[in-house]
Image: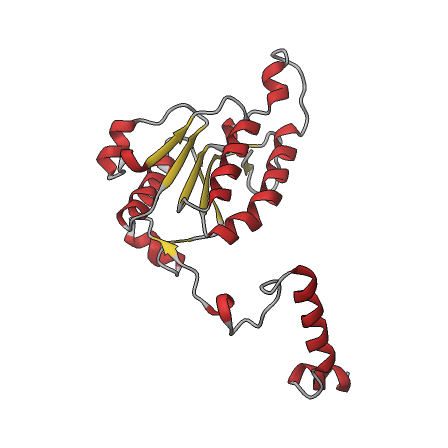
Length: 217
Protein backbone atom coordinates (compact mmCIF):
# COMPACT_ATOMS: atom_id res chain seq x y z
CA UNK A 1 0.00 0.00 0.00
CA UNK A 2 2.82 2.39 0.89
CA UNK A 3 4.55 1.67 -2.43
CA UNK A 4 1.35 2.48 -4.36
CA UNK A 5 0.87 5.67 -2.35
CA UNK A 6 4.45 6.78 -3.11
CA UNK A 7 3.97 6.14 -6.83
CA UNK A 8 0.68 8.01 -6.86
CA UNK A 9 2.24 10.95 -5.07
CA UNK A 10 5.09 11.03 -7.56
CA UNK A 11 7.70 9.39 -5.30
CA UNK A 12 8.67 6.78 -7.90
CA UNK A 13 7.05 7.54 -11.21
CA UNK A 14 9.51 5.70 -13.44
CA UNK A 15 7.21 2.70 -13.93
CA UNK A 16 4.25 4.96 -14.66
CA UNK A 17 6.23 7.09 -17.11
CA UNK A 18 7.41 3.95 -18.88
CA UNK A 19 3.83 2.72 -19.16
CA UNK A 20 2.69 6.10 -20.53
CA UNK A 21 5.54 6.13 -23.06
CA UNK A 22 4.64 2.62 -24.21
CA UNK A 23 0.95 3.52 -24.60
CA UNK A 24 1.83 6.59 -26.66
CA UNK A 25 4.17 4.51 -28.81
CA UNK A 26 1.51 1.87 -29.44
CA UNK A 27 -1.56 4.07 -29.88
CA UNK A 28 -0.34 7.56 -30.77
CA UNK A 29 0.77 10.73 -28.98
CA UNK A 30 -2.69 11.74 -27.78
CA UNK A 31 -3.73 8.30 -26.55
CA UNK A 32 -3.12 9.20 -22.90
CA UNK A 33 -2.33 12.47 -21.16
CA UNK A 34 -2.59 14.19 -17.81
CA UNK A 35 -5.92 15.89 -17.26
CA UNK A 36 -4.29 19.27 -16.70
CA UNK A 37 -2.37 19.39 -19.97
CA UNK A 38 -3.11 19.75 -23.66
CA UNK A 39 -6.56 19.08 -25.10
CA UNK A 40 -7.75 17.41 -21.90
CA UNK A 41 -7.46 20.70 -19.99
CA UNK A 42 -9.85 22.54 -22.30
CA UNK A 43 -13.42 23.15 -21.17
CA UNK A 44 -16.07 21.29 -23.16
CA UNK A 45 -17.89 23.65 -25.49
CA UNK A 46 -21.67 23.83 -25.28
CA UNK A 47 -24.50 24.87 -27.58
CA UNK A 48 -27.34 26.77 -25.85
CA UNK A 49 -30.82 25.25 -25.99
CA UNK A 50 -32.54 28.61 -26.34
CA UNK A 51 -34.30 28.14 -22.99
CA UNK A 52 -32.72 30.13 -20.15
CA UNK A 53 -34.33 27.93 -17.47
CA UNK A 54 -33.15 24.71 -19.10
CA UNK A 55 -29.63 26.01 -19.71
CA UNK A 56 -29.48 27.08 -16.06
CA UNK A 57 -30.74 23.70 -14.87
CA UNK A 58 -28.18 21.87 -17.01
CA UNK A 59 -25.42 23.71 -15.12
CA UNK A 60 -23.18 24.23 -18.16
CA UNK A 61 -25.48 26.61 -20.09
CA UNK A 62 -26.25 24.28 -22.95
CA UNK A 63 -25.73 20.84 -24.45
CA UNK A 64 -22.10 19.66 -24.61
CA UNK A 65 -20.40 19.18 -27.96
CA UNK A 66 -18.90 15.78 -28.67
CA UNK A 67 -21.62 14.01 -26.71
CA UNK A 68 -24.80 12.03 -27.36
CA UNK A 69 -27.94 13.60 -25.86
CA UNK A 70 -31.38 11.99 -25.67
CA UNK A 71 -34.47 14.20 -25.52
CA UNK A 72 -37.40 12.05 -24.44
CA UNK A 73 -40.94 12.73 -23.38
CA UNK A 74 -44.61 12.14 -24.23
CA UNK A 75 -45.94 12.68 -27.72
CA UNK A 76 -46.14 16.37 -28.75
CA UNK A 77 -44.16 17.52 -25.70
CA UNK A 78 -41.75 19.73 -27.69
CA UNK A 79 -38.79 17.40 -28.27
CA UNK A 80 -38.35 18.27 -31.94
CA UNK A 81 -38.93 21.96 -31.22
CA UNK A 82 -36.14 21.95 -28.63
CA UNK A 83 -33.82 20.16 -31.05
CA UNK A 84 -34.56 22.76 -33.73
CA UNK A 85 -33.78 25.56 -31.26
CA UNK A 86 -30.38 23.94 -30.61
CA UNK A 87 -29.77 23.80 -34.37
CA UNK A 88 -30.74 27.48 -34.73
CA UNK A 89 -28.32 28.49 -31.95
CA UNK A 90 -25.50 26.47 -33.51
CA UNK A 91 -26.14 28.16 -36.86
CA UNK A 92 -26.12 31.61 -35.25
CA UNK A 93 -22.59 30.83 -34.07
CA UNK A 94 -21.58 29.98 -37.64
CA UNK A 95 -22.09 26.22 -37.43
CA UNK A 96 -23.63 23.63 -39.74
CA UNK A 97 -26.28 21.10 -38.77
CA UNK A 98 -28.06 18.03 -40.10
CA UNK A 99 -31.55 16.72 -39.37
CA UNK A 100 -32.16 12.99 -39.91
CA UNK A 101 -35.93 13.00 -40.36
CA UNK A 102 -36.72 9.34 -39.70
CA UNK A 103 -40.37 10.19 -38.96
CA UNK A 104 -40.69 12.09 -42.28
CA UNK A 105 -42.52 14.82 -40.39
CA UNK A 106 -40.21 17.86 -40.42
CA UNK A 107 -42.07 21.09 -41.22
CA UNK A 108 -39.66 23.49 -43.00
CA UNK A 109 -41.95 26.47 -42.40
CA UNK A 110 -42.07 25.82 -38.66
CA UNK A 111 -38.29 25.31 -38.52
CA UNK A 112 -37.78 28.63 -40.31
CA UNK A 113 -40.07 30.45 -37.86
CA UNK A 114 -38.04 29.07 -34.96
CA UNK A 115 -34.91 30.59 -36.50
CA UNK A 116 -33.36 27.69 -38.40
CA UNK A 117 -31.40 28.69 -41.51
CA UNK A 118 -32.76 26.19 -44.03
CA UNK A 119 -29.91 26.87 -46.48
CA UNK A 120 -27.40 25.64 -43.90
CA UNK A 121 -29.41 22.63 -42.75
CA UNK A 122 -28.82 19.20 -44.26
CA UNK A 123 -31.91 16.98 -44.25
CA UNK A 124 -32.12 13.23 -44.82
CA UNK A 125 -35.26 11.08 -44.84
CA UNK A 126 -33.96 7.50 -44.61
CA UNK A 127 -36.18 4.48 -45.13
CA UNK A 128 -34.63 2.22 -42.47
CA UNK A 129 -32.85 2.41 -39.15
CA UNK A 130 -29.60 1.12 -40.64
CA UNK A 131 -29.68 3.79 -43.34
CA UNK A 132 -30.35 6.54 -40.78
CA UNK A 133 -27.49 5.50 -38.51
CA UNK A 134 -25.04 4.99 -41.39
CA UNK A 135 -25.84 8.51 -42.64
CA UNK A 136 -25.27 9.80 -39.11
CA UNK A 137 -21.89 8.04 -38.90
CA UNK A 138 -20.78 9.41 -42.30
CA UNK A 139 -21.76 12.97 -41.37
CA UNK A 140 -20.04 12.74 -37.99
CA UNK A 141 -16.90 11.30 -39.56
CA UNK A 142 -16.65 14.33 -41.87
CA UNK A 143 -16.05 16.58 -38.86
CA UNK A 144 -17.84 19.43 -40.66
CA UNK A 145 -21.04 19.48 -38.60
CA UNK A 146 -21.76 20.97 -35.19
CA UNK A 147 -25.13 19.29 -34.55
CA UNK A 148 -26.81 16.14 -35.86
CA UNK A 149 -30.42 15.46 -34.83
CA UNK A 150 -32.04 12.04 -35.26
CA UNK A 151 -35.82 12.27 -34.98
CA UNK A 152 -36.65 9.77 -33.59
CA UNK A 153 -35.35 6.55 -31.99
CA UNK A 154 -38.86 5.09 -31.96
CA UNK A 155 -39.02 5.39 -35.76
CA UNK A 156 -35.65 3.66 -36.38
CA UNK A 157 -37.11 0.50 -37.90
CA UNK A 158 -34.59 -2.26 -38.77
CA UNK A 159 -34.50 -3.30 -42.43
CA UNK A 160 -35.35 -6.90 -41.54
CA UNK A 161 -38.61 -5.72 -40.02
CA UNK A 162 -39.44 -3.57 -43.05
CA UNK A 163 -38.77 -6.49 -45.41
CA UNK A 164 -40.82 -8.91 -43.32
CA UNK A 165 -44.55 -9.47 -43.07
CA UNK A 166 -46.70 -7.48 -40.66
CA UNK A 167 -47.15 -9.60 -37.55
CA UNK A 168 -43.73 -11.29 -37.70
CA UNK A 169 -41.76 -11.27 -34.45
CA UNK A 170 -38.46 -9.40 -34.51
CA UNK A 171 -37.21 -9.66 -30.95
CA UNK A 172 -34.47 -7.23 -29.95
CA UNK A 173 -33.58 -6.06 -33.46
CA UNK A 174 -33.87 -2.36 -32.71
CA UNK A 175 -32.05 -2.73 -29.38
CA UNK A 176 -29.10 -4.46 -31.09
CA UNK A 177 -29.08 -1.83 -33.83
CA UNK A 178 -28.94 1.03 -31.32
CA UNK A 179 -26.35 -0.72 -29.17
CA UNK A 180 -24.02 -1.17 -32.15
CA UNK A 181 -24.57 2.44 -33.26
CA UNK A 182 -23.75 3.82 -29.80
CA UNK A 183 -20.49 1.86 -29.68
CA UNK A 184 -19.43 3.26 -33.06
CA UNK A 185 -20.62 6.83 -32.56
CA UNK A 186 -19.45 7.61 -29.02
CA UNK A 187 -15.71 7.96 -29.71
CA UNK A 188 -16.26 9.37 -33.22
CA UNK A 189 -18.47 12.22 -31.96
CA UNK A 190 -15.98 13.07 -29.20
CA UNK A 191 -13.12 13.26 -31.72
CA UNK A 192 -15.04 15.53 -34.12
CA UNK A 193 -16.73 17.58 -31.34
CA UNK A 194 -20.15 16.93 -32.87
CA UNK A 195 -23.28 17.12 -30.73
CA UNK A 196 -25.65 14.26 -31.59
CA UNK A 197 -29.26 14.58 -30.39
CA UNK A 198 -31.65 11.63 -30.41
CA UNK A 199 -35.33 12.30 -29.72
CA UNK A 200 -37.37 9.51 -28.20
CA UNK A 201 -40.90 8.87 -27.02
CA UNK A 202 -42.12 7.50 -23.72
CA UNK A 203 -43.96 4.18 -23.73
CA UNK A 204 -45.74 2.40 -20.89
CA UNK A 205 -44.91 -1.16 -19.89
CA UNK A 206 -47.86 -3.46 -19.35
CA UNK A 207 -48.32 -5.13 -15.98
CA UNK A 208 -45.87 -3.05 -13.92
CA UNK A 209 -46.86 -3.32 -10.25
CA UNK A 210 -44.08 -1.32 -8.62
CA UNK A 211 -42.11 1.67 -9.87
CA UNK A 212 -42.74 3.76 -12.94
CA UNK A 213 -44.27 1.97 -15.94
CA UNK A 214 -42.70 4.51 -18.30
CA UNK A 215 -39.91 3.39 -20.60
CA UNK A 216 -38.32 4.36 -23.92
CA UNK A 217 -37.86 2.15 -27.01
